[in-house]
Amino acid sequence: MARNYYIFSNGRIKRKENTVYIENEQGDKKAIPVEDIDAIHIFGEIDLNSKILNFLSQQCIPVHFYNYYGFYSGSFMPRERNVSGELIVRQVQHYLDYEKRLYFAYCFVEGAIFHMLRNLREYKNTELFQEKIKKEYDSALMKNKIADLMGNEGRARDAYYEAFNMILRSDFEMEKREKRPPTNPINALISFANSMIYTTVLNEIYHTQLNPTISYLHEPGQRRYSLSLDIAEIFKPLIADPVIFKLINNNMIKLEDFEKDVNYCYLTDSGRKKFIKEFDHKLSTTIKHRKLKRNISYRKIIRLECYKLIKHFINDEEYKPFKAWW
Image 1 (cartoon, helix red, strand yellow):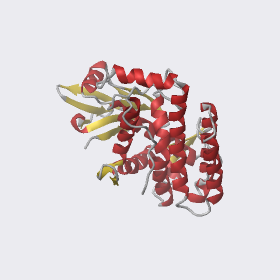
Image 2 (cartoon, rainbow, N blue to C red):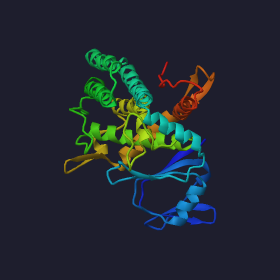
Image 3 (cartoon, one colour):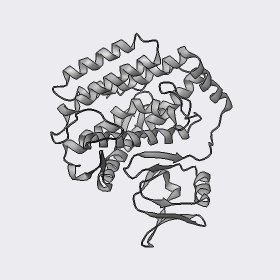
């Protein structure tokens, strides 16, 4: 099974024939099993050259880079191997036709809100927040502008994050959602989790014929893979948030796993490793798919969501957002 490979140390990545290895600052070398990995995530200060990037491109291995604070900076994406001019044209057509774009935007909001409510139903004293979210869901049904839909989704998510104080241990207090920059541990953890979902979705898009820059809920931008942002909305509450709840409430991650800079809070390497361990475990967890009649992993569910979009584009099957049934 393909997997992510994480680099936290400083050093350089080198290649010798068909072997790729990382050499740290002390000169110690460790082979990178390129034949068994799906993507490389770099958190340390790493030197690498075009020879390495060319080799990784040939192996179809994306490389994701994170800054000093552990937040996503950018990606090296290999040349697309599953190119379909016809599908790209259809993706663009669905963006240019406002009604078609609005349909997708609503679907992504619907999937996100469904999983927010699903999470809150598992915890006591969240009924008030559920009601606030349901009102935004009902209101979204009536909207005919994407900006208004994003407003519904944003207010629903604000209510959802307010409910975190009913779910998490008291030492992890959620005052309000802050992204740029996060100023307390829970905000830092949410931002890191969202980065990991974003790159995971981007990896799965790469293995399909979809173009990751053509999106529907989020406006396509010059410096981001905005389709990954769209699809990630569905899976942040389904995959990332339960990992956060587990780590905090089971005392697996502590306040000592965070550091504060001037107006900035971020996870230490130990904190990132703890999250990544549980996050990868979650992605590899399987459920019995009621349509396919076999066990599939959460990671595979994301890939299937991409294929569902493709089926819609080619008029094979109308897209409906994924909704967990278990």
